[in-house]
Length: 307
Image 1 (tube, rainbow, N blue to C red):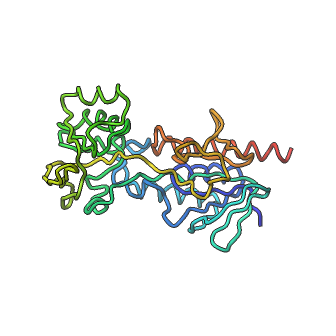
Image 2: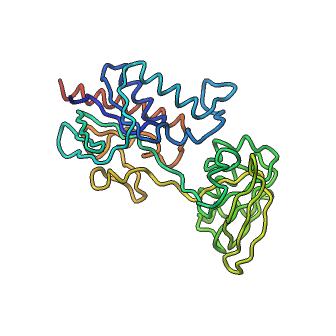
Image 3: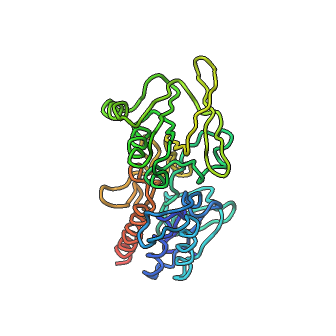
């Protein structure tokens, strides 16, 4: 059976697209992946999503979206897509040996934050370890924080966190930042920001929340302890686009490219939304908005094909 629309990915973008597509009687199929729900499944309190004045747990929000998508008739497959072929219509998507065909596709596979991979980091993720200052900075009012990284994202995170934290320490493995000069100057001139140069994080400590870091100087090999209440990792994100290499147009960083002001990709009938496209905002609410756009764009495209 050929689906009218098949959605790949199940974060806020994919689930919102599913809700809109289902309500438009497009009978969507969603292949949500084994790690359903996207990055919000790793987030504890979400206080900046509209409609929840007292906040909501990330997994709780995603489960509510999931139930809403199913309520309107979305067929959900909890497996990972292994291969796609968008060269012919109906489009073909494989989940292992199972073939799914669809008249249209919405790609919403998201992006994954790059982590350090050091002891304590994964255990304390959501308990003082974060990759999103905009999402979690509010919880660290009057606390001392560390930001790991040296690019524009790290400078932006550090500057944003000064709105809440009493002190922010940027930890960078080199002796100069790779960020733009204006961002570097803003960070270095800020009275609440310190920098630890030539250093890497060896371990994250704390129970039940972050209490400090072990740092190693890459020049001298000496280690020392830094007491902090939280660590923000700002070393970039990796878009989940491996299966789309050579299938869709991607930018130099691997994000799916779409038409300006819309969600259409380089292949007619294939649309994309959320963090797999957006490397600027990376918020649940913007991803959900793009999912809405993708569903509407898909419905209009399908109507044009059947006119």
